[in-house]
Length: 314
Image (tube, rainbow, N blue to C red; front, side, top):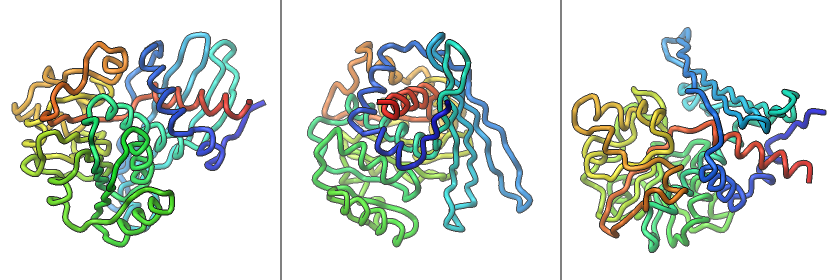
């Protein structure tokens, strides 16, 4: 029998602490086989471009997972989600389908949990101020996940639309977090200890000159080479870390400055598996500016899906 796990069931199953711990364990084991994800461009009748992403992962004899994601950036102008996804989980020993899941919730929660996990190694232990850049589907999840790793006294929300930022901040306040909307991105970046960005921007939003020593920059939004959330100075000033070397190298935040000769991708010091396995110590100085580029990994999807499936049968 195939389980159908909807939005509410996944939110319950993927508790932040449990999910962050699950991801850490999977990165330590590093037993997942995953071919490169496919990103297919789909030109639209109105001249815009959408994307279809296909992500696969399996642990031989244990489980197989397939996620299909659509990215329609123009949806934001009409109040619709820009990302939609579905996930299928199969038995790795028999090939039988075990579960079908709401891929939107799965993606949002595993992405935010991975960023929080990275911040555990890369953000200062005394980080007190968090800035969320963007007001889309991931904004609330990122704030809640990061807040499980540090006790933030302030969570600022910035978005191009002030009303959207206010709504996100209010939702977070309702959840017990000290959130507020902000209009000034430069000042918010200058005062933040951790900056987490999840936008569909194709032009840099975060400027390196705004970053103070000790800042941790978490970049989630860009997954194509034409997408960009940080400028060249931000990347050049930072110690670089990624979730996965191959996929992160194709994102605009790293690919564009590398193509221009401003950085060498060999400067990336470690991926998330190397951090979790203790093969790299992470932050070594309170003055370091650290940058974590998250491009998304099918390992994270499969780990979250397995956790959700276990919870639904317990």
